[in-house]
Image (tube, rainbow, N blue to C red):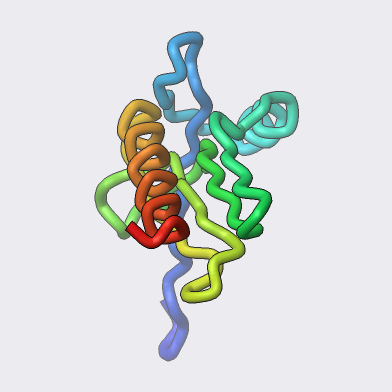
Length: 113
């Protein structure tokens, strides 16, 4: 390594099997093709009156240096405080549970409860 150079972070690449479980792949072309041919969004909740959207999707990549692979992400957009918050999850079930908790929390906040 040259002095002053920063090592590149390697990303581990994943696709989903038939039961929506992540499977690591080592061919970036295969990964790119799979990512472009599949619907990566599992749940989207649009709260029209408030303009808030909560989306849960498969990321398909994880940086090696972070340790745990958080391959699913739930993103909240359109809130006045902290637009575009993101929350990672290891499994689809964990991500969908997280999605529901976030939606319920926002709905309680919007209704003043």
